[in-house]
Every structure is written in structure tokens, then in C-alpha cells.
Length: 591
Image (cartoon, rainbow, N blue to C red; front, top):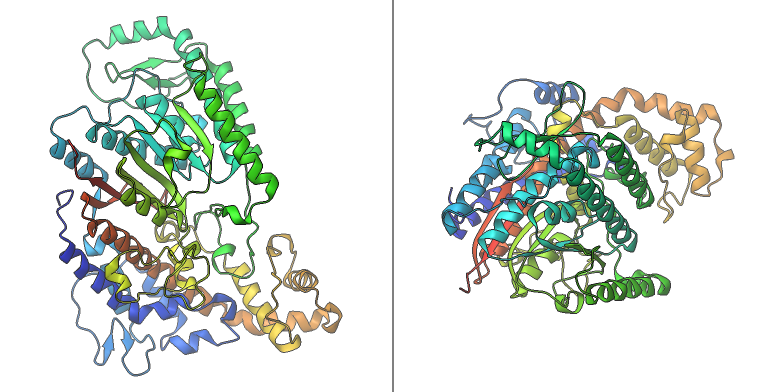
């Protein structure tokens, strides 16, 4: 598949296929786990047993290939009752309608090869002479993401002949620091959280300090290692010596320089960075009891803090942002002092209408990037790319689909100035395409991790669903505006869980004895396998919903006359990083 080899008409046919499948199966994903027993969800949607579902999902049988469907069924659903009657047919259809099954995305290696073909034999993605940042400064997941994405961004910058990168939703600045230190790119990291911006600045300062000290201490040792590897042009990787010391890659030969007498410095900087990370944590205050998504373990679902619109900020926070940005501009105005950096963190809430030159006075042509941009920020990134002439390429990896606003949602919650996150493309707008919040929550699930043994936290989900039955049976205000929150982690038993939840909801817990509460648990415990099976079906359908959202974004780029190349690329290993797909685009060359 060439970089721009998927014609828009072919893409639209693929979107139609995905939509047709989801129009039948999406009802499962939109069923709320909290209502599982109060609305008898299993009987409403299923004509097969939980055991059949679990057995089929866990089976090593390959659910692919053309198999004749049962009469009067579509994708395993009965045409008359709309209930699932053939689990194998559904599993085959789900596999066929996710992104790999539709055959619409490319691998990272294919993208890099196509970039070289488009712009000729260049040195795209080649690093500077600076040593790389050691892996211990990032966890394995983040290191995997940053390394893969930075190669793509650096190649895009080289292809477009630009030296600036704008990272939207830059968070703690991992990607920004890596791009500036390794590839000598001028990076502007924009984040709506001043806490993240300050943490990113501190992190970058400490990494730069380590980099300088490391190069100085290892110059002699580096020369020896390079001499021994003279003439070697092969690729190397970070490796560990027999004494436990680390090796670092250099650009000149692709060989390594052994670490000498830097363990104390490395430990100190690592300790400093860990302290910075802890100081910049901004835990979400979401309701852990009100949604299926919020009760899932970190291994099953991505976590990110939502953006805060300026209108929701306090006066103090708005003034703080202005002050920090003015201080940054003042520092830049002083010229190239010894502490200057190629990475500039700044605080702002950005949309497609944001005038970038008011934030970045020295703005030139640039590559726009977003690594796990939350909710509507990913669509805003693509709209910004289309609207701003100086943005020559884009690489966007989104996350938190449950925070997307939908244009055809009757509530229209979250849309800013009438601009919504889904759908983006005119093709799906014309069809009034709609997913639903619960389906978008399901889209955040990580099929690969669950398949590899990272199970769902079923007991907490079960507790919440049975609590809902109790609230319905004994309390008139069971649909209170108040939230249950994450009381499961603090509860020692189901009875304790219910009592904690009732107190949090300001309900009279004396109405029920411990025996009354326990009787609900005992009544529904034999039906817990229904919930397990149903939620595994949600996990199975998750990649199909994510696929439709991402195909919409790709279609949006292909609809733009000023975008010459666009593709959907798998950047990451989904086991390490479940939100692994990037939307990549390049504008027509103005040269």
C-alpha cells in the first residue's frame, strides 16, 4: 500500500462496511453495565448461554474465513428478534471489521519506506550527535511510544524541510525532550495544564544537565569504544554489560559508548525525574462507579486527564498561565544564553481557531504532533493542521474516545462552539453517524491486553450493578446526580461496599440490615457469568468502534484539497500501548 495509495472511494466503501456491522452490533456496546440486572440486559440481547460465549471467545479456533451464516441472521443476530443467536458468526464479523481486517492501515516500516520514496533518498529521521536519553528516565510503555513516534516525526520534518515541531497536549514533555535532544528539532510543547508545563520544563532541564555531564565524562571512553568499532555502520540497540552498566547509542557509527562512572549521576537524575513526575500528577476526579470505563484496571484501558476549557478555569489559574507564557517569551527574548533549550513548554487551551503566532512569535513552518491527545483534542489537532498554512505535516495519536463530543448526540454535551469531535468527515456527517457514549467507552478497551490475560475487574462491575438493583428497590432517588465514586477499592466486602456507597450518596443506610444487603449478593452471584460474558463481547467489539472513529479522521484528511498524502499507521505494539494507531498527513509542497 503506497502512502496515499488508498483512494477516498475505497476508504468510503470500508467505512460503509464498518458502519453496516456496527449498525447491528453496536447495541451490545451501548448497553450500560450499571443497568445490567435492573434492565435484564442478557435476556434483552442474547439467545445463547454465557458458557457458549466464553467458550467461543477463549477458543483457539481461528474465527476467520467465509462460513455460511444461519438462515435469517446477519452477523450472528436474528433478523426478527435482533438478539444474538450465533456467537461464532459475530466473532468472525468482528475480526473482519476491525482495522487490520479491513486492510486500511500500514505498518511503521512501510510508512518510513514510503516517506523515503516520496521525497527521495534523504537522511530522514537521522539523529544529532547528542547521546540518547537512557530508558530508565521513562517507563517501558512511554519509552516505546516516544521512540517510535519520534522517528516518524523527525522523518516528516526532514521530508517537509522544517526544523520546528509543535506538540499539542504535550503533558510532561517526554516526546518534546526526546525530539529536541536527539534530533536537534525546535519543539514547542503546548498543554492546557500549567502543572504539566512546569513539570515538563523541570524534566527537560534535568535531562539536559545529565546529557551534558554524560558527554563530558564519557568523551575518553567514547573515543576508545568508537575506535574499536571503527567502520561499523550497522544499527545497534541499548544493551546491558555484564557489570550491569548501560550502553548508549551514538549517531556517528550506530555503535555504542559504554557508560563509565555515571551511575551516581544517573541515579540522581532518575530520582529527580521521579520526584518531578510525582509532583505533576493530576489524577482525574471521575466517577468510578457511574461508568463501565472508570472501573477498569490500568492494564485494560488507557488513562488520561481531560482538558479543561479556559471558561472553566479560575481567575487565578488564567492569570498564572498568562504570567508563565510572558516569562517564557522574556527568556527567549534574551537570546541564546547557556541555559537555552530547543524545547519550549507553554500553557494554553488550543483549538483549530487558535492563532499559533500569538503563542509562538518565532513560528515557522512546522510539523504538528499529538501523542495520546485526549478526547476532542485529537480532532482539533487535525482541524488545526488543515487550517494553518504553516503546518506542513501532522502525526496524531488519539485516546479517551469516551470524552469525544458527538454532533448527532441529542444531548450535544461537550461541543465547543458547535464543533464536535465526531464525526469529522463530511461523508459521515451527511449520514448523521452516531456511536453513543457507552459505545465510545467500550472503544477504549484493550482487546490485545485482555486476550493476553489482562482480565477485566469483574467483581467491582458486579458490585456496582447489584448496588443499582438495591437503589431501585429501596430508594426513590436512585438516579441521583451524586456519584458513587471509587468505593470498591476501600471496601472489605459487598456489605461494606454498599454501606460506603449509601453514605456517599447521602442515603439512609439503616433501612437495610447486613442480611438484607448480603441477600442481594447471593441472589445475583450465580448470574455473574452473564456479566463476564457480556463484557467480553464488548471487548471483542471495541476495535471495530475505534476503527470507525479513526477511519472518519482519515476520511476527513482525504477530503481536504491541500493534503497530498494521508494514511492510518500502526505505530506501537498494542500490548504495550493499546491506542496504537496514528493519523498521518502531509500537505502539498509549496516549493
